[in-house]
Image (cartoon, rainbow, N blue to C red; front, side):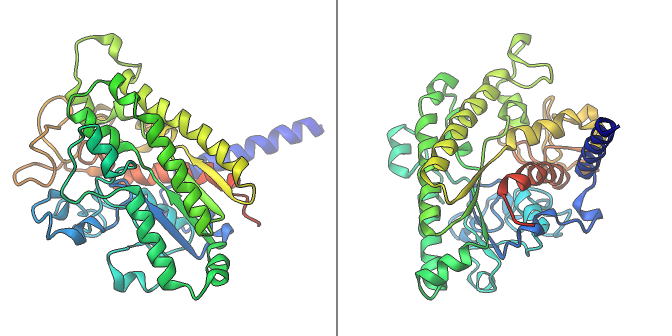
Length: 378
């Protein structure tokens, strides 16, 4: 009888946890991360989590398509600099913690209100400029690297906290997100036509840069740090289009490109090992891997059950051309490029980034995965 009760309790818990994943946060007041009592979130990253830094550099980039509708159309009704039709995963993570959306660092008036800061910049890389140029990687005009974002973070902390004790006390109650980073280091090379074998050579250096960044934020006073991995990029319309082949052996059972997904797995495996090393080096910090790869795969493989159009799971909502509604040079935000009638039926927003709804489900998955590992006291 005791065994039966234990099995029943485990099954009930599993069903409750699983059912939560299917409930969009917009339809519930559930805020599971509130148990951690975070006062602030500090985020570094690229376009996956930029909430408006690059758009505030628009004097350098006045014509970027991300700066206008249809970006932001679903939630904000205007473009905010987010690479989606609505919210990003970092927005849902903030909501789950009961914290307002993170203000971009370059919006100084908003940053002054507290609750954390977002240092992420669209197109940012993990590797610094000198390493990228040595690898013949062309850089955008608005180049930003992880080290620059950490410099911003240092400046912010020095300007905000009275002294070291004040900073240490405040940051004990904060969540740090270091990444997702590294994606653009690989994207720039892939879009140049470099081979996967060539790109694999820089992965250890990318991961070491991320590891060093985590060490640096712990030095600032971070106690709880989440370090996200890379997505399965072989499932994205941009690469399904660029690397389209008639060779069926190049694809997995879900028609994703195996070689590109294996590149992401290689990055993630090295990153997980780096996190293990960081834990040994920093026993007083809680360092958690953010499994963006499997969060995406879970949404991707359960698309029909989650309300996505199973026939359009690999198609962009905003885009045109080819089997995946995506064409380089005719991307979302460019005049004349169409938007699908119902973005909630698509996973991909613009061929590279996810829709508001896909971000919601991936964030739910991540929150449920990291929460028990953060060791928050109930």
